[in-house]
Structures are given as C-alpha cells and as structure tokens.
Image (tube, rainbow, N blue to C red; front, side, top):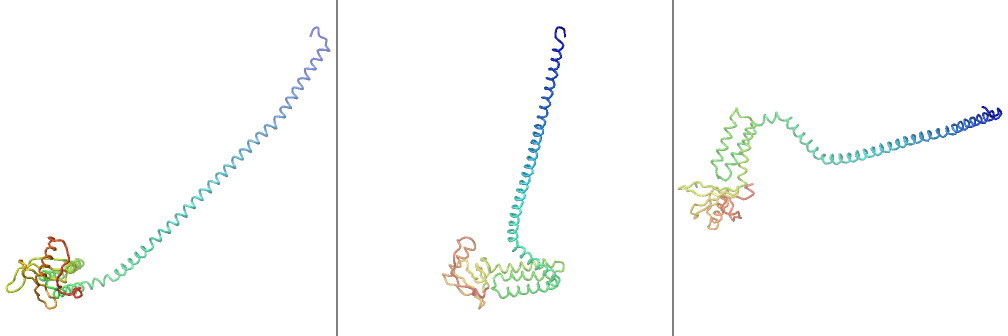
Length: 266
C-alpha cells in the first residue's frame, strides 16, 4: 500500500490473522461447549419419554386391575343370585321329579289299565244304579234313565274307551252334585188319587212337598220309605225354602225336620 511502511502493513496483517485465529478458537470453544448441552437436553427428553411410558404402563395396569376386580365382584354377585334361584327351584324340581316318576309308573301299567278298564266301567255303572235305587227317590225315573243310557253306551263297540270313561264320570258328578245343592220343582205325588205338589230338596238330607194351597205338606222318611205330615210351622218353612230356591226371597236358615241323619246321608 503506497505511503504506509512495509513493516506496519505486515504488523496489521499479522494482527488480523491473530484476530481471525482467536475468533475461530472462540467459535470452536462455543461449539465444544454447546455440544454437551444438546446431548443433555436430548437425554432429558428421552428420560421424560421413558418416564411417560412407564407411567402409561402403570396406569394401564391399574385400569386392568380395576376391571378384573369389577368382574370378580360381578361374578360373586351372579353366584349368589344363582344360589338363591337354585334354592327357590329346588322344591319345584322335586315335585316335577315325583310327577315324572308317577307318570312313568302309569305308563308302565297302561296296558294293564286298558285291559281292566271295561270291567271297571261296568262296575262303576252298577254301583251307580245301586246308589240311585237305595237313595231318596227324588227324580228317580230321570236318574235311572241316566244309568240305563250308560249301560247302552258301554255296549257300543264304536265308542272309544276314554269317551266311555268321561261319560261315566260325568254321571257320577251329577249324582254327587245332588248332595251339595238345593232344588225345587212341581211334580206328581203318588197316591189315591195322585196330586200335583211342589217338591223341595235340601241336598240329600231333606225332601219335602207342599200342596199349591199350602194346607198340606210332608217330609220323606228314609228309614221307613214314606211321607210324614208336616205341621203348620214346618209347612211355612217349606214355603220359605221354595221361595229361596226360586230366588224370590233372600237366603236364610230353615227350621225343618230331616229326611235322614247327616251321617247316613254322607
């Protein structure tokens, strides 16, 4: 450079080179200092990630434990409920077992029962006829006609056995119903001459008649097989009974003599 001594120029160049050297050295130191800081930051981040992963696994394990505990509680409750249900069903199961055992026994003897059924039906019809014949003779013709129809029915080869049994049982039920109800009807009283009277029946323990004018009445005596006259008070009770059966008077107790004792009627 013109006007500047050589020595001075060399000195400036030397100084500039020194400054560049120190600058590069500073940069190198700065770079060297910043490298460990970056690694530490990355390690810290990685540690945080690891910690977060562990925490997530812990949370997941806790949730799984809670779910299993809940499932265990539900299983225990279901077990208790089933135990109560089984305890309630146990008597029913025992009854069903007894019923099935009875049906198996019935099926085992079904062939024998079918073979014995015709004789059993004939015996039932004969016993019914005897009962009607020895009972109080109310509506006797009608009741004996029912027995006659049963005997004709049993002789029908085209009628199934179960239908025959059903009809015989129905006839027996009709006879049994006479012992549980009241009845009244107008009919003919045998005699010389026969008279039209009103009959009143109280089950199988009382059978009475009353003339339409109410002046005569009687009670059937099962022991002697005839009618015994009724006094005025008893005829008044029969009149009330006729009105009660015909739903013309409210029900009330009747003071009447019996045709037979309750023990004999049963």
